[in-house]
Length: 171
Image (tube, rainbow, N blue to C red; front, side):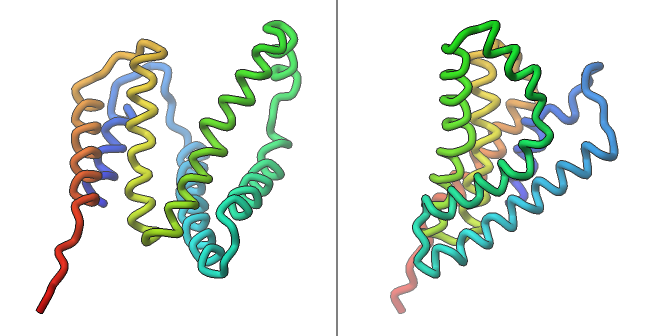
């Protein structure tokens, strides 16, 4: 777990010197709240699965809850301007992007909770920021740094160690 956390920390770019990144107490608070509620999602999803709820039902309820909370903060004017300026293709792209970055990961994570411990599933999910960083390099031509490469290596090491099957004691 420590390797995965350190890896994500290094890969995030938090330690990089960047004039455009500014830390605020509110931003840090929101980050901690996001982590807290993600942990709660893992716990409550695992409980729901044990009570024989379908994983897609759990995912649907979670996404509806998230939508209710975040929709009032949406900048509808900017969103509609982007769609109007770029046509219906942009709307299709935004819907597909939402499926790929929100719906599918939550659904797959919830399915995984049915087969393993919530803690292990959460650590395995730490590969997501690494995947995001790699996609950023390929699709957005972001530049890798020494710290981000160290972060990738630490996280991949953690995921590899976690994926090694436990030895079965036959005594």
